[in-house]
Length: 189
Image (cartoon, rainbow, N blue to C red; front, side):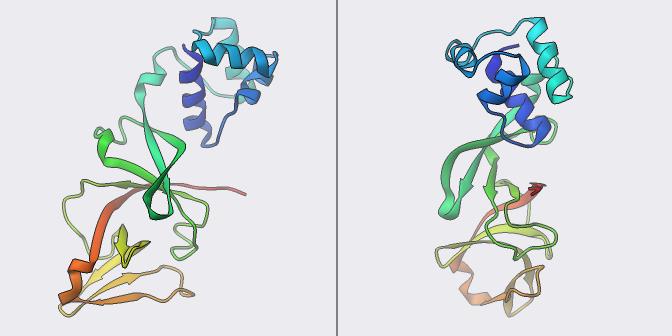
């Protein structure tokens, strides 16, 4: 199994960033040695894989890396970061439609909290009342539930400390729905 695939798989299994230094500790070597392994994307021998499995308390298989897709993480205004998460291909077969954003408010707390990673799907069938979407409105991004009645569209927060956004139905051209909530990766302090 190639070292970059090992790191990607560990990030997915542990839901956290795994550094080259962490891998160096696991295989009892220096970070410099691991950096060289990454530069060549070396195929790790069975002994190193077993040390990594023991250190991180996970089970890796040689074909496991093919069961995941990389999903980009965006920040405010949909600027892509260098970070990504890995999702199981079973969770999403359409890698081009899936993206993630780091949540920067508690407006959807307790369901989605500040610091969580919210995963969205660009290809959704319909806008269902009460479902959570990533919405662009007046050049701002919002993660909200959409409630639609005949005269207004409400972008609703789960957290009562946040004011809902009410939009006249005839102004729907000001709203862009970027994606439907797919899943949440919980951030634990």
